[in-house]
Figure 1 (cartoon, chains in turn orange, brown):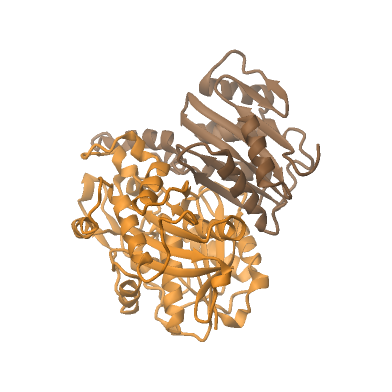
Figure 2 (cartoon, helix red, strand yellow):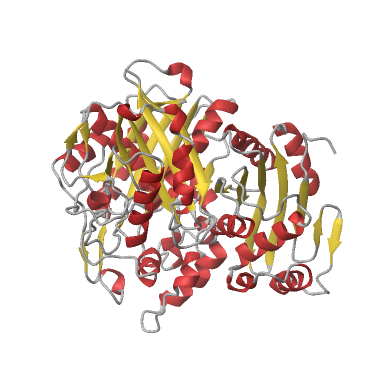
Length: 378
Length: 202
């Protein structure tokens, strides 16, 4: 078990966790159609930053050197997460763990500021981000496809339990580029309209940009009212590199590892990956029912943000912490009629809860699946 | 060999392939051709190999050479994790994919190429081949760092299901420049021992 000491969501729906939560509560979505962006052959539906606005905000930090947009939103998110905590990010007892699938990959297409090839390396970005805060420990970047955000938190837990660090700053971020959009288009995975997780009419996912941070500390700092990450597991389907297992094998096995740590009645929700692709949502419904959790409210936040790749596992966990604080289970925007075979409880609107725990689930290419249990000490 | 040290290991570079003390002959070939030759000479029964990207081919060949004769090979198991590290992530594939979309008038985004632009795909390939249902993770570091690899690998035994880790360094800068150093670490190994073992193999 580790303790959440601070967090931030920096997204097109807001620059603080609170602003993001308030927008989601109002039912606002950042998803919209981009018809001629980057001169691509097909339009796409996505959630993207107003880059100028974020750049202006970043300049207020008076940076001493040049950073890419990916690095800027990561730094902004960490900066805001640190506010209100007494964590000294430059400390030798603090480690940075970055979660990203593609980092600066947009520079491969166009690099007008001439950052150069070295900047394509995730380790270079991670080092620069840690360095911005005066931290000189070797940062780790977890690049585990779409489960990176939860994987990174699992590693944070292990690091705090077994290494001489006192705080781990987990930052998840990805930005969209022609590379990522055309790649998902080539897989026929994108929907041309707002996604509809778990719905009978769902026809694909939307992509989104975001950075999200969670700062963890050791269990000894736990007190009443603090959020903890209790346990987490990562499992593989051992089935296919680009399609989920029909039996939800890895996902089920990851969920099963958490069983001993929660009381089902205390679970406010299972926040699923819920990408709104036919196969992902179907697979998750099977894994959840196989794990005996069909009575627990299930939701997806993709209808507000799209799939934010390396940020998703952190952004979605932080939103669930806030919703649970307010005794709410956030509605699955876009959902109307259950369209998966597992009899799970999904709802389009927000619901009330008395639970103090939730599970975050993710699945990704490479057959990987992750699940993490969070609990608020009451 | 006592239980508290690595059980198996492999090292594969464009010039040389060794595993568990044995050398494997790549017939005077180099680079990706050397991997293909190793596959044909010593593995041969997995045609999916030819569809893989260079990083996955490297991880596949190195893990196959290392696992030859492993007890209970191919029996389904959840107690072995696959945790790999490198520096270049999937950059060689990223460059190849970007080439297919850069020119919008001659544009063909290849889905099979795109899937491999994630470094963790190789961990999935190894899991599929060996029927490993355990953890799979991929971590990118600024540079090779034996101590960091060892500490993160040892910390993975906090998962109560994990009894061994197929771990190591799997770097593929380009199809001709690569470096694989894999090991099987048993539960109970210390970070210090594993750091020494990694340094001596690499």
